[in-house]
Image (cartoon, rainbow, N blue to C red):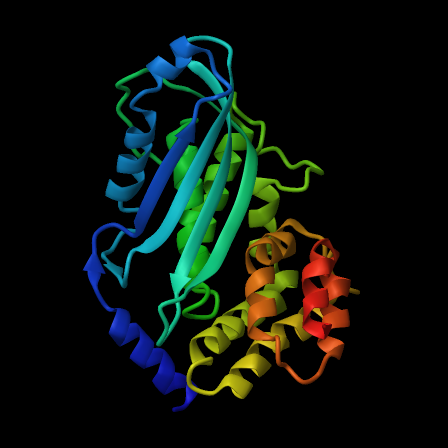
Length: 293
């Protein structure tokens, strides 16, 4: 089965028309708040979950399975009955061809969400105006969708990345700019989009697409699939002299994928790939050492 045939087969097997793109589970932790604020936020999880799952983020029906994702919201403070801060962990996955396994896509820990919320508040999507709740949700919805589309076609996520970038610019100019303003923090929303849309990271995005072809081909031809996976590692290793290998984009990729990479390359014969992995992703050296035991 050649590459084009496999891709067509996968798309046909997943074809399902949906108005909405996401299947999101929202959980909320209120332990950092006073009892009164917890009571005022009693409906918050269901309101957020309903908004994400009922909103159509693209202008046409979604052709494929809904993307499984989750938002785990940890409230960190409340300065009044309506003013809140929270830390959010965003996770998304993708189905793997001929497998029950879900490939991890995003695992982002965003510590800087601030907003106003009143119990019973209705949420409406308007990507032309910044809203501290819906704009944050729209940003991550578009990121999740774009990140997923980049695995099915080269640069397939560009439209959604552009939408997310527009939202980021609105956030920078709002009264809730923390988390949007470009900073040297380990994670920053706007810097992530800067990287995704920057031509210098084009080789990474090309290899990202090839990597997921390898993921889908793994049950068909393991050796060839591993070569596609290893290609991304080699591309990043060669990019070190041209780009910041510790960029938000590359860290975001490895934060989700390092475990999968180790699982799929355990019996890969060329162990020099381990040194390359440790060079481009030093945060997970102990995990990569499993490949040489």
